[in-house]
Image (cartoon, rainbow, N blue to C red; front, top):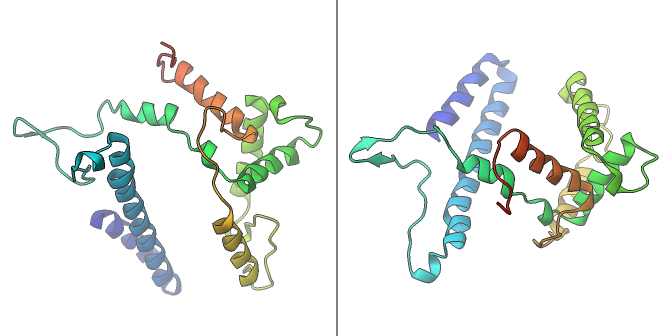
Length: 209
């Protein structure tokens, strides 16, 4: 964690003096959040999967612990099959709120206004939506980016009240629960793309196999 923070802070030295402090604060805060959420996943999420609390065990994965075998250091990041499992199985689409589902649907319909049903969205159509959206971001200076229908003021900033309303509504919006058919229809095509990637790119077997 310290090395990551140090790397980002050193990059800030190339920025104008007026921006260095903001950049330092942003990068350090970002990495603190990453470390915090990683500890939650490794401590609580994994513990729930393994059911260690009911076994009165305090064991948890240590994010920075050295892995050794027969006293020798084990190479890291080589042949990590877990990454395939997470990429294929651990999708969180079902937990999205209704507002998130509506936002995704609006993106699709902006590009395809004559779309009759979300069931008709193909992989090619979704890729086109992402390509158009990505190209728009790439060709627009970050200081001019906008979202959610917000408009920037003369000084380039959003209204505090508008941002506060978005944060408030997101906090109050409940997440959906997981289930066999819980993926929102607007993200059904993303699940399909994940399956195609598993078969055509990762070359892994099907769930039935």
